[in-house]
Structure formats: structure tokens, C-alpha cells
Length: 266
Image 1 (cartoon, rainbow, N blue to C red):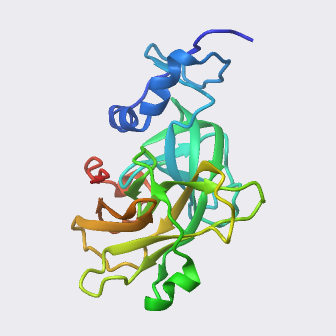
Image 2 (image 1 turned 90 degrees about the horizontal axis):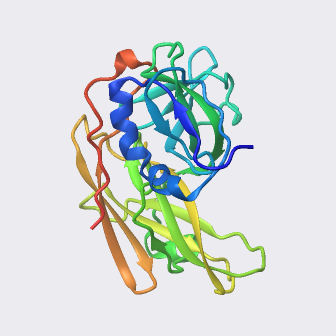
């Protein structure tokens, strides 16, 4: 096995490259700290660094009409995985962290082709309607922190959150939910709820969850402010995200423009 940083060659279409400059910040920053052997399907003269132990994209794993899968990287960009034909998650659409290498292969109508080195799904669930005064009993009100991170983002009809809270050693599963309808004057205000299920607060730990926003009112192509509220360890907090209702993106022929829905956290 080689030591040091492995330099992987590949040629990438310009619009995919520009998108990945944002998605790859974590990998690029960590390159100098790692050594490993890596497999690539690139064959051109452009060089790029890949860190195989870290994800370089947050995606939605989607099933195409022909039962193959493709990966949605943001509101506008899809890629075709050359080495995975059927979804490991069956017919379920999920959000996932992935490490992939772009390839000079047939993109099958998408914006590009990639070789998946590894992929790991994250908890993906729908948002639920709030129950007013009964929400505390039903969904909990235990404190949690939202981490301002590259995976904390509203895109492709999902709100994906990295959260941090205190965990015990009891093996008790915590419950997390996203409540809608919490503000009758603003349908785009939602609330993150955490129920520790009585678990001891011994050590800090992080989790990832993605909530489908398909039941929110259609923004009809407009960008609106999605307000997220949660009970932190220092009181109620709020973060604002730019949100536009999800569009149908089965092939690159349906995609227009460049990504513009960037998370804003205040």
C-alpha cells in the first residue's frame, strides 16, 4: 500500500467542477493529514486530490424510471454512478454521504458520471405537523445544538441537519423530528425537536438527519426564507435557510442554470 497522498487524475466537465469546489471543502482541507490508496476511473491530464476516508458530497439517492439509480448533488446537478446500478436502499429515496471519483464515462443523460468508492445513508424522514401544546409530550423538548456545517443545508426538497447533544452509555435511541405548522402566519417556519428518551447526559456526540419538506407549500419557483427554530442548551435559537420547492430532475435535460440555493445560518 502506498503512503502519502494519492493523486487521482480525471477530467471533469466545468459545471460539475464548479459545484464540487463547494462540496469538497472538507476533503481538500484534510488532504494534508492523510495517506491512503485509492481507486480511480479517471484517465486525463487534470489532477485532483481525493481523500477516501471522508465524504466529498451529500446527495439524494434516487431511482430512475428504468430502475437504475442516480445521485442528486444539489437543486440542479445529477450524476450517474457507473459501478452501482441498483439502489442498496431498494425503492426508498434517501439522503446519503458519499465518496466518489468523477469519470470520463457515459453520463446516461445526467451532468456527469462518477465511480462510487463508498456511500452511507443517513436517517431520512418526513417532517410532521406540530400538535400545539401537546408537541412537548409527543416529540420531546430536550436541548440540542445545530452545527453550522457543510452538511447543514436546505436543498433538493430536504432540510439536512448535523445536530449535537449529550448522550449516555445506555444504548437508548434518541428521537428527532421536524415540526411544521408551528407558526400560522408563516408556513415556512419549522421547529426541530429532540427527545432523549430519558438518556443520561454524559458526553457530547453528533448525529445527521434529513427531513423531507415536500408537504410545505409550493414556492412556485421562488426562493423563500425557511426559518428553523430549536431548543438549545442556552435557550431558543433560530437559523434561516434559502429554500425553493423541489423540482423534478430525472436527467440533465431538465436542468437549467447553476446552483443558487446556498444555506444561510444566522
